[in-house]
Image (tube, rainbow, N blue to C red; front, side, top):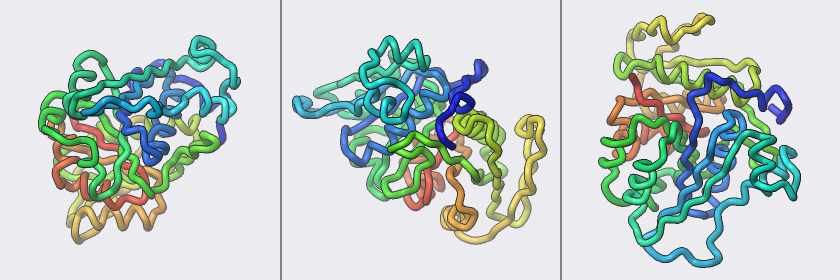
Length: 288
């Protein structure tokens, strides 16, 4: 959806007030940055850009230029100052370098000081997580896995156009199982899709790999009835990816097991295997 007044309307009930985008400053991170910035605009939240390096950061290494991108998207003037942008769009972008620290330690230190509601991470498919998230990922899981995480895989089709900032969320897939419960993921993806698409309609697909579908909590249904659950059989991650391709979805929202959410995502779980091969971004949402 093109950027317009409706798509920039902010919901005061938004649960996203602060976004963390750890970046390795590579070109591969460009799509993830565009998604993080666009969500920041839609939710009028603060965007933290974080780069952690075990070595000194070269002088040439630079964070993505948020003001330039916002001007390219037609949301601000090229000469607008940060405070003008904050007044006009209701967002603030903060750049933080942490040097001479392992990435995981740096992220933990940052999250100890800043309260964030969402992380946006770039991945490189099969080896993306371990490219710079080396170290004890279990610490991130045990201390901070309550944070929903949007994974943008290199080569996958994003729902934010890097050039124009336009958003396209037409279809969303939510795989469901008996555990973890999918209610929080369904509600979270509805809020994100509604905010980003300016209230435009999107189609929700619910998928269960198995013989009988679990019951959906009433709290997940909101005012609109949910669609019937699609039943499939086969290898779970492959079946989810195949369904995402078949339905041509723009986002997969994966319910994860609470405090084990990020640990699962980084250690070979269903979520991690879906992220490796998904044709679109994957939104990992810890359950209640």
